[in-house]
Amino acid sequence: MQRTSIKITSDKLNLQECYRFVEDASCGGIAAFIGTVRNDTQGKEVTQLDFSTYKPMAIKEMQKIAALTLEKFDIYKIAVHHAEGVLKIGDIPVIITVSSKHRKAAFAACEFAIDTLKETVPIWKKEYFSDGAVWVNAHP
Amino acid sequence: MNIKTLFFGITADLIGASELDVVLASSISIGAFKTVLKEKHPQLKNINTYAIAVNEAYVEDELLLRENDVVAIIPPVSGG
Image (cartoon, rainbow over all chains, first blue to last red; front, top):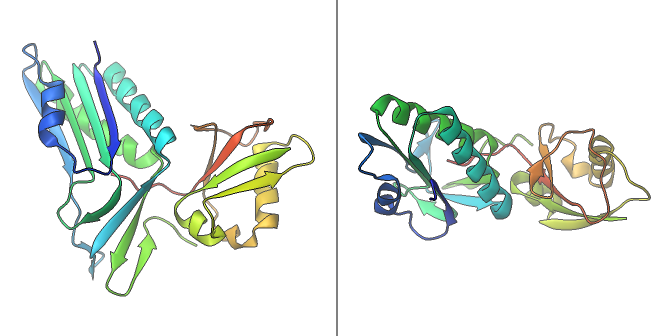
C-alpha cells in the first residue's frame, strides 16, 4: 500500500485530493498545511510569484521527506504536493496533509515536513513587484 | 571529459543559460569543480552559498566526478 503521495504540477493544487489520499478509518485526525501566496514581502507589494523546480530531484527530495516523516512520527499517510509556474496572490504553492491515530503526531509531522521541504527541496521562487523581480533568498 | 552542468534560480540568470557542458582534463573533486566554475564564469563569484547535486542527489566537496555525471548548481532554495 502506498503511504506517500508526491506531486509537482503546473495545475492548481487540489486540497480534496490530498485529503482523500490520507484519510482512513483507523485515523483520528488529519493535519494540513496549506501555503498561500502573500501580497507583500517586507512591506513591499508583491504582484505574483514564479516557482521553478529541478523537477526530477525535487520529486526525489519530497519523497525522502515523506519517507523520513513516516519513520519519525506515528502517522499513517502523508501527501506532499507543490505547484510550479506563475502563481497569483492567494494561490496555493504547497499542500501537506498527514493522517494519524492521534492528533499530536499529525501536527508535529506536518510541521517537520514543511520545515524540511523549505530547507532541502530544489524549488526556487521569484517574487515580482511593480518595479522588478528578485529570487527569494538569493544574495548576488 | 564533459560534465553536463545545470543551473537554477539566480545562477541560471547570472550565467544566462540553464545548461552548459564543462570540459575537464581529468576527474576532479566537487570542491575543485566549484573553483573551475568560478574561473570560467566570474559572474558566479558573488554567490557564496550554493549546494551541488550530482545525478539528482546532494553531494559533498570530496566526491570525485565521473564521466557522464550530471552536476546541478543549487542556489539557496525557496520552495513552500
